[in-house]
Image 1 (cartoon, helix red, strand yellow):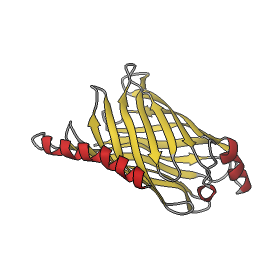
Image 2 (tube, one colour; image 1 turned 120 degrees about the horizontal axis):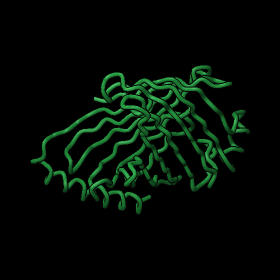
Image 3 (cartoon, one colour; image 1 turned 90 degrees about the vertical axis):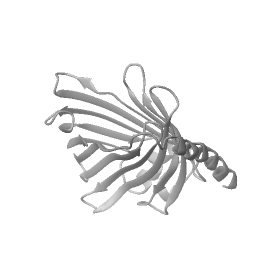
Length: 234
């Protein structure tokens, strides 16, 4: 752990030094809610969200990222994670990321360091690739694409892949047992790109030891949901 914190400090200190250089940059801020939705499945329905709150400059941003899933039938969180991230550009289209992630809802609280990349590929796929460093390290890769059907109707396919590297039975994670989430949402830009209600489908599946732990806990390894929600930003 000592080595980890040294590495994390090595990532954060250059970003903090960049902050002083960015003092002259105009302040920007915003909220981007990618998902605020209700998922309807065969078992328990789920309320879910995924949003970023950011402030800073073009050279350095501070981002609060929150993701959660709340099972309405059980009245309990399935997942709840919050990240505090620093982002600074490393190319025209990609930011380097360093920060901290806190998981709280299931089992004991977990704190991870975050090192990653966030940006757009040449074909305008939005990509997040994050390595979470702690006693229970893991890797996450997310990709999303906004495909215009008309000027207002947008199809948004997405994929999220989580891979734990160690066993963590307390949080239902088995070493190298990945979790895959695939979604497809059709939105309508009600107010420019600021408010976009959508409907869609969300599929998630656990594999390997992670799936075995879910079954042992009385859960299904996979589930399909019809979703209704909205994207918004300001």
